[in-house]
Length: 440
View 1 (cartoon, rainbow, N blue to C red):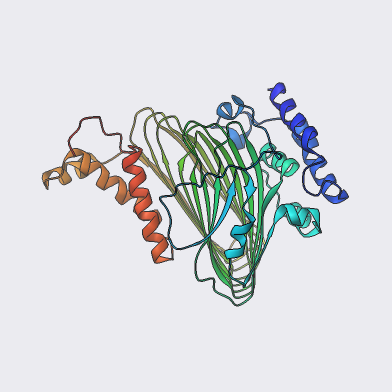
View 2: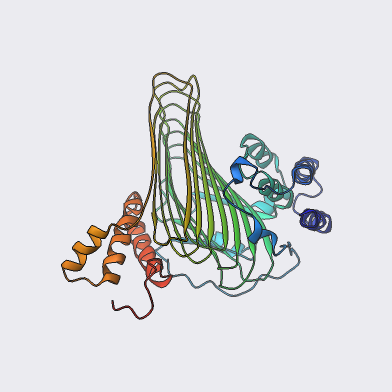
């Protein structure tokens, strides 16, 4: 493991002068502090509570490297999910700046590399104000090596007519990209953002992204994250949501691709009347490993949160859900609910679920729960008695299970697109675990 740490330290030494903002003292200090913490703590192991159920072996097997001097591939990703959106392309960690020109005038857009090279103080303040404790080492690595991303501001009292679709595509073996996104919604604004992560099969690469969404008072955010990395890829991402007064932030995470995936979400409920809604669906097959951690911190009174994550696992897949709701002493009249439901389709699939409530206020409404089960034999028999084959019956029950989470998407067109996408994934990746040759 020491050789692995040295590899990433050497990666920083090689690129430190080419990293954006390298001549600015504030950025240098931030990077060096993160690098020091990375070297001191090293990579996590299963003795750490936040990594108790997930080995980092797939990540450790193929050291990944930044390549800032490499020309980005001109290959355009082939996306099945393509509703009417404003598309922003980030290919092999390189932002296609021309794609920013298609955004409406009500959105100010800058590459993070440009902001880091100019006045980076707003970014420094944001990074320091949002701690990312659960990702620890990987967050430090991202801070030390961040080189691109988006800085977007939605003008107050505007409603963006189409989703902003941020496509992250990788097809270079052993490449690492470290991205930061900073998105601000002005007061009274409404917008939908899609973070889409994808790449070809059999290509090992690493995508590390940390995103910050600040929602001013009376604003509405709908956030979609589609994690469909290649079957040899590693992925870590951290999402921070900060709803303002009487604002609503909704996040939907769909994980259905990648060899090793870790996704963390943090909500900071600091303003009265703020709402956060976290929904997730993970479809894991083969030897996929996916770990989802959520944390909602209720810091003031009269705030509301909802969490609903569901998983379908087959083959030798391993999944983790760790959800935390923390209610401060002053956060009276908090209304929080958390639920995790899992469907195991193979005796070799594993799910580790850990819902948590930490409540220090005495006038609250909080609930949590978790379930792990298999397809009901009675339900299968009922479907087959109505003329469906066993294959069709299994697919019907699985899609019905997944639809519960998809129905929370507010945008009707987006909801229908995601529903079609998930149906295709279930069939094409054989999530149902149907034996070859079985009649449909």
